[in-house]
Amino acid sequence: MAESTKNATLSIDGKSWDLPIYSPTAGPDVIDIRKLYSDAGVFTYDPGFTSTASCDSTITFIDGAKGELLHRGYPIDQLAGKSHYLEVCYLLLYGELPSAEQLEIFESTITRHTMLHEQMVNFFRGFRRDAHPMAVMVGVVGAMSAFYHDSTDISDPYQREVASHRLIAKMPTIAAWAYKYSVGQPFVYPRNDLSYAANFLHMCFAVPAEEYVVDPILARAMDRIFTLHADHEQNASTSTVRLASSSGANPFACVAAGIACLWGPAHGGANQACLEMLKEIGTPDQIPEYIARAKDKNDPFRLMGFGHRVYKNFDPRATVMKQSADEVLDLLGVENNPILATAKELEKQALADPYFTEKKLFPNVDFYSGIILEAMGFPTSMFTPIFALSRTVGWVSQWKEMLNDPQNKIGRPRQLYLGNTQRDYVDIENR
Image (cartoon, rainbow, N blue to C red; front, side, top):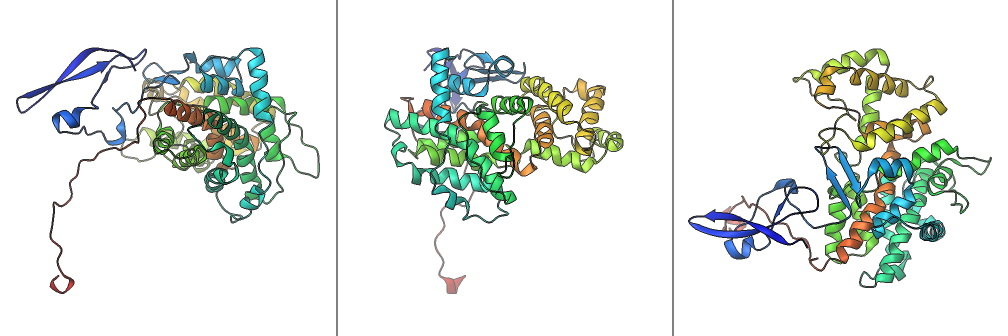
């Protein structure tokens, strides 16, 4: 915990209390209100916790005004441009970039944990064929605690380590099998000779009838999608994982809770909403009409995939993702796909329009990732499962950090109660 260097004074009805202020290594100062209720008898009111620091962390830092995203101090554009997903996983989990030997051991460990318990095949078949892949992932990940009893004791550092590796390793298999199940194709087992991203693509698109070779450009683009979504500070799903963890729940239950939260369209469904918007626009010749609607304050329509709630300048992940989108579209083409042709033209017209540039409504990571996944052949129902796959390492890193925090206690938000005060029960015949 940081040292308090100054205080804030709170005055209520003539009484005053000094509240410690902590200065972080980056970001705004934080006022410590932990003793506010016991000392002053009041709560703070912060719906959505948008001004509340729920923990201290050393993993990820975001400066939305500057368009900055750092993992353990390293800028996301450097990691996405020079590193790869499993190296970033190691960084998030352990705090430092690995040596060549450490990375080789870590990659080998993850690669050899990708298989699922064979009885879990039957678990998948318990779902309806038309079940959403996210529903399948929530159920299967939660059920891992029933198959991997030897890594559920959160008090054992070794079991925490094994659970972390298992979640990162098996999530691509779970996501790919959820997809295969939804389209009625046989499951494809993981292969140890493929990279993390290439293995996922192979499990999604290979079939027993013929050989499927993963294009390295597509594997690199998928790896960047994983990297750019690996962690994003204390967002809704990460906070959900931490809150579930605070009760002492096992790691698989905690991550399943995070997946359920990510499923919400206001969180993990942004790239899916972007593709649905492009389908609504239809063809490039309709774009001027929709741009005009986006500018009209009286029209509820807005361009999905432009701007960001956190990043008020630009999304630092978008530059790298745009590069991947261009590479993928050059490889696969857009001529026969009206959605992709519309996306390219919308990007061009929006970036040339002063209305969007002045308001800093630039294409964000969801815009480009949606384009890439559409071009690869994924249905929109798989966009959020791929997000969950990517974010697993962030959830696990935050979970591990929380368990090692001596200040860790069960989460218990307060409320501003506006209901009835005490009333006496009235017998039914007198109502």
